[in-house]
Amino acid sequence: MTVEASRIVRVGTRGAGDGRRVLPEAGGADTLGGRTRPTGARHDGPLARSPVERVIHGWRVRLVGAWGACAAWLRRWGWWVLMGLVVSLCWDRAAYLNLAAGARLGDVAMMEAKRGALETRWWFALLKGLGELTWIVVFVAPVLVLRDWAHFASRGLASAGRVLRRAVFVLLSAALAGGAAEVLKLVVRRLRPNAALDEGLIGGWFAFRPWWERPLSAENLGFASSHAAVAFGAAMALGLIWPRARWLVLALAIGTGLSRMIAGAHFLSDVYAAGVLGWLAVLFVRELDRQNNGGAGVESHLGSSAVRRGVPA
Image (cartoon, rainbow, N blue to C red):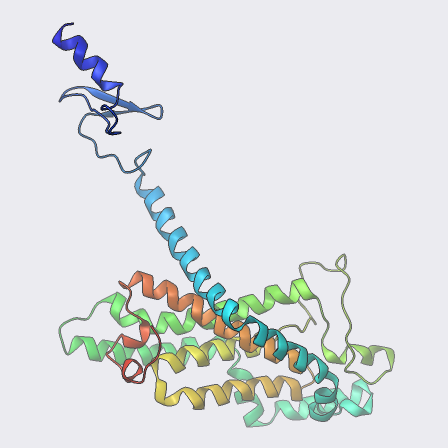
């Protein structure tokens, strides 16, 4: 057998029992999976990935990891979460009748008048406003950006990624929580607690919208409260990066949930579910952020006291 023929034979065979691929010499070509590559090309798996495929694969791995963090938390605390939901469902109507303005009157006009009076109160407007993304975009995000820019600029380390990291973390946590609440409304389809008033009854009873009636509209659906979800998502994210203020921001988020109950717009279980969604959103975004920053949690971004206080990584 000539040298050329023996080289061709070696290309299509494996080493004796060692499983190694014998590649052709320089100037040849290797055919693998129907694709011809020049000799010397690096083999990254069955087929070399293109740049777009590598980006898609990277984000798929990150998303799976983020979902895994949420799933791990649910496996550990899921039964307690379910028990809390059951308890809140049992107290839904009692909480509605005792907290919602004009709930015992059973009159739509009088209830709307009392709700309109609430809208003029500064504290009610403040708590309701905390359930919207506007205050995060206008106030919280700029404060975080300016704070982080001053911190890193003084050390000559300022960059867009470092300066925007915490602001994006809080904004994405709140937005994801609010979006998840809107999706859950479309799935559960439970109406707001004052739905029974349309039939002349005292509100607070459970009522559900049929699937065939406006299937993609969340209007007048209550489970879960998107205002409360946004507030809880933002509060829990801020609590991670500002540990000393965690109880203050959490109290404000609870106040937002109570304001929605006082307005007669939500049951207690709507607010409870919003709190759970808020925490899951924070876990999800936190894991994405950690993977994008070499495993370092956002709470250690400035070397903050969160690490010293034992916030889990």
